[in-house]
Image 1 (cartoon, one colour):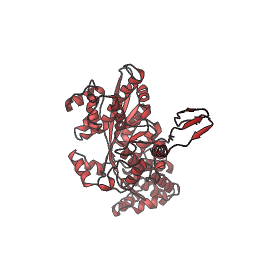
Image 2 (cartoon, rainbow, N blue to C red):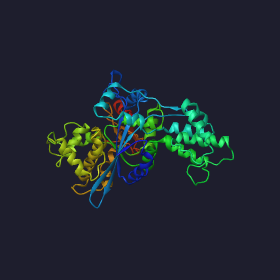
Image 3 (cartoon, rainbow, N blue to C red):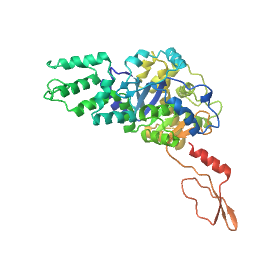
Image 4 (cartoon, rainbow, N blue to C red):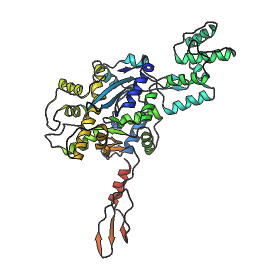
Amino acid sequence: MEITLNNFSEQIPNITQDLKNACFVGFDAEFTAILSGECFKHRLFDTNEERYNKLKNEVSRMIMTQVGLTMFQYEREFDRYVATGYTFHLCPQDFGEVDQSFIFQASTLKFLCKHKFNFNKFTYEGLPYLSKVEEAGIREHLKNKTMVPAIFHGFTIEEERELQSFCSMVSAMYLDVTDPVMRYMVHHELRSRFSSLLTTDSLGATSSPMKVLEENLMNHVLGFSRIIALLEQYQKPIVGHNIFLDVILLHNQFIGPLPENYREFKRNINEMFPRIYDTKHISHHMSKKLSLNEVWKSNALQELGHWAACENSGKKRHVGPSELLAGLAAFCSQVNVIRAATLYMVTVQCYLYPAYCFIRLGHWAACENSGKKRHLGPSELLAGLAAFCSQVNVIRAATLYMVTVQCYLYPAYCFIRLGHWAACENSGTSAPPSCSRGRRPSAASLFLNKLAKSK
């Protein structure tokens, strides 16, 4: 289902309920730019911190124009997953002192046009959004009673005349003010000009407290950020494919400006989304368990989706588009994003494939751990992929993935006892056993330790 400014308020109870009942959520997004050029060229010896520093300044000028969320709910009675998909159209906003800006790259425009992206929905019906930093600034203005001058300063001449017209009609019983920002301003102006006048948001009700009006205003300007807040609140596992750039954009667009410190960035992401799974990273490690004849051609999303659609995924065979969609349809009893895909074909691949592949890979891993094939629920599936939680794929770098959760890995030590040699392995999670003498780690071990910490 497509969610725009016109139906967001109506659909948010359904979205909230679907998210609350979901066992995990598929995620993907479309951007206004694609990082290219010599300065963004991936180098094999880049550490994750170096890659982050290379991207953060340019990413701060990009935005997500469309976000797809697919909520997967498990029906134990039928042993199946029901997927409900939502496509959110986003658009920057100008409100008070907040005046969001972005760049639109020509190559990205070409790509979006090719796939029938609806630019009218982006500009006219796109949902507003705020980062946590922007939200805090607006709430501070409301608390200090300085919000009205900031809003009024951004009004056009036509909007000023419209506000004056509403105030001049004060003798009327009901004013039809549909825009939430204008409605807030009308309430404020009428109460300021006529101290004995009572104003309400609905006929027959008592005068609305200013706090209620302010909260209604905040709900309007927050827009899609309310969905991000729900994802943070329910802490559902988020599944995506190759989402390193997505994660950086999530921080910049919904948390705040990207920090200079790489570790601070990871800490902020982990606090907000502690359970992220990247199917590109998972598939890279799982592919090592297959022979050349069984493994997928590449772990690009479409190739991985073809593999997942096979009835016998271990055998190499061609899967056509009709068979692939049939496999997806059989996999889900309710796939709302399929309908949207007739207008925007990338929707199926991006919004449904990652979670679809996630289930197939998770079932494979869990059955391998238990030693037998059987029906599995979502908790067992997640347990099978627990080793990959909070690990985000990084393309062509010294370290192949970023660990969002803080961890410390230490090199092994070699300890010497008087009279004989004994090699003691240390996993890095506990202190080494006591002994009479020890040898310092080598330069190579120290380098590997530094590399591990950069994850």
